[in-house]
Image 1 (cartoon, rainbow, N blue to C red):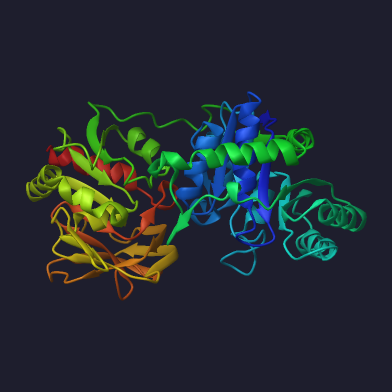
Image 2 (spheres, rainbow, N blue to C red):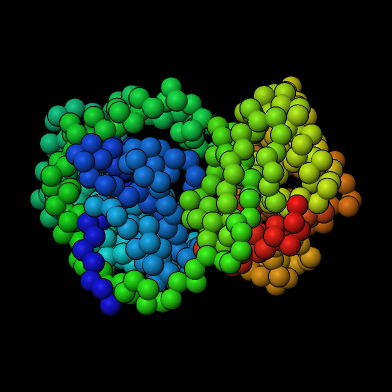
Length: 463
C-alpha cells in the first residue's frame, strides 16, 4: 500500500441554497490564483455546478456520489483517480450536510467526508440569525460525531457587528474557528433557471461572477487558515500503482464516436468520456448549431443540456437534423440522454414556441411548468437493446421539465424503474433500431458495461 498526503476539503452546509457553490467557486479560483493545481469534485448528480467549478479551478470537476459508487472503497478509489497531479482538492457537497436518501445517512455529504477523511468547512446562512448560529453549529457537531467539521464560513452577513456577534458565539460555544464571512452581494449570484444555475458553457457574459467569487474569497476568507486545514488532512492509503492490473486499451483500431458537445449539449461527466475512450473510442465532437453533417463516425452520443432554450437555432440547422435522421435509419448506433432524447424527437413545444427536431423518434416533446422527474433513478434493463444485457441494474438520475406526447406505438421502453419517473408509468429507455434514448442520465460508476457495450455495438455495426 502507498501512503498519500493529499490536501483536501469538503464544503458542506446546514441546508441547501446556503452558498456552498459561491464558497466552493471562490476557493477554487483563489487557490488556483495562488498557483496551486486545484482538483474540484461535486458530491451528487450535477452537471451545472461542476461547469463553474471547472472554470474556476482550471481543471475538470469530477463526481463523487455514494449512490453511484455504491461503497466507501469505490468512492475513495474514484477520488484517488481524480486527484492525481493535484496539489489540493475541494469537494462541494449537496443539500444539508447530513441529508441522505437513507435514514442511516450513508448517502450524505458527511458520509463522503468520512470516507475521504476530509476536513469539513460548514457554510452557515447568516441571514436573520445572531448567536443562535452557535446552537445550529453545535447541533451539527454532535449529530454524527465522527464527521470532521473543522471550521465555519458565514454567508449573507449584513454588517461588521452582525459578523462579530456570530463569530464570538460560534467560537466561544462550539470551539470552531470562523474562517470568514461573505457579505450580501448580488455580484456573487450566478443566474439560474428552471433546473438550476445557467451552465458556464452557455453564456460567456456570466464569467465575471467567477472573478467576483474569487475576489470575495480573497477579501473575506482566511485562505491561509483554510489551506492549513486542508493540508492537515490525515494520510490516505492507496493500492500501489499497477497492483490491480489495469485492463489496458482494447486491441484494434479506435472506434470513431461522435459526441454532440457545444453550448446546447453540455451535460457530460468527464468520467463517462474517459470510460468511452478506455473502451476503445476516439471521440469526435460535433457542434449541433454549426456543423452541417455528421462526420464519418461509427456511433453517436447526444448528452443532456437545454435544447428548449435553443430550439429555433437547432431547428434552423436543417442539414444536420437530416444527417442524424438518415444515419439513424441506416442503423447508426446512437445513445441519447434527456436533452438528446428531446433532440431526436419530431418537435419541441414550449408555450407559444415550437420547433422541429431531428425526427428520429416518433414522438414529440412538451415543456411543462413543473418538474416531470427529479432525483435518483434505479432501473433494471428489461428488454432487448443495443448496449445492456437484460437484467442489468443501472443507477442514474433525472431532472426534466418536459414530457413525451404523441408517441408512436412502435417505441419500446426497456428500463423498468424501481426508483424515478422516467418517461411514464415507471418506464424509461426508448429503443428504435440501434437507438437507445432516455430521460435517465447515467454515470459510468453506476452503469456496469455501459461504455464497453456502446463501443462494442459501434464496432459490430461497422457503420
